[in-house]
Structure formats: C-alpha cells, structure tokens
Amino acid sequence: MVYNIIMTTLTFDTLAYSKKLRAVGFTEEQAEAQAETIINLMTEQLATKTDLKEVELVLRRDLKEVEAGLKRDIKEVEAGLKRDIKELEVALKEIEVALKRDIKELDLKFELKMKELESNLKRDIKELETSLKRDMKEMEMSITIKLGAIVTAGIVVVATLVKLL
Image (tube, rainbow, N blue to C red; front, top):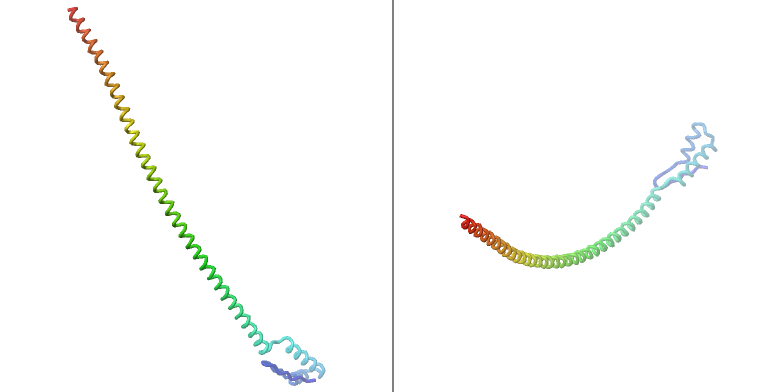
C-alpha cells in the first residue's frame, strides 16, 4: 500500500521512498512497512505549521492575559503605594507638629530652670555677702578686743617700767 501524505509544511512521497528502498534490496512488504512507519511517526509526532500556529495563538492569548493581569497588579500596587505615601506624609506631619510642641515645652522648661538657677544663685550670693559681712564684723570686733588688750598690756608694761625707773 502506498501513501502520499501532504501536510501543511511537509510533503512525503511514500511511493518514491518505497521505490528507493526496493532499489537497495528491501522487499515490497519491507519498503511499505518502512514507509507506513515513517508516515505514522510524521503524523503522530511532528508538529505542522498549523499546529505551531495554534500553539502560537494560544500563547499570544495567554501572554495577553498575563500582560493584562500584570498591568492590573501594577495599578493596584501603585494605588497602594500612593495610599501608603499619603499615610506616611500625614504621619510625618503629625510627628513634626509633636516635635515642635515638645521643643517649645523643653524651651519653656529650660527657661524656667535657668530662671530658677539664677534666682538661687542670687539668693546664695546674698547669703554669702551677709555671712561675710557678719564674719568680718566678728573678726573686726575680735581684732579690736585683741588690740585693746594689747594696748592695755602695753600701757601696763610702760607704767610698770616708769615706776621702776
């Protein structure tokens, strides 16, 4: 039996193939069996241009679906990022306001502490002045008493010396 199969991209002449096989010593049954086997292999395992076109169409459709899905996903991610950026901007503004408030509070506390320290220093200086004045008066009195005692002792010594001479 001789087959002449024409595929979209591949033509196989089984009669010519069978003749070539018989010319090199194959029997007619062997040549036909060989031709049938090749035809079966070609029809079952080789892809035709039509097969490839169908696969290409399916792949293009799938690629378009994937592309559409990716575009949709990208838009969702962009929307999410924009939302997150706005939330971060709001949070940063809140932090900025809180920091400014905290800085003002710290400035006020610092100023109050400085005034308190200044007041304490003035009070301490006045106490030291008062204490120094009191100590100087006591020393003055003590020196005056000691000088008076020395002068008195000197007078007694001079009077004693005058009586003795």
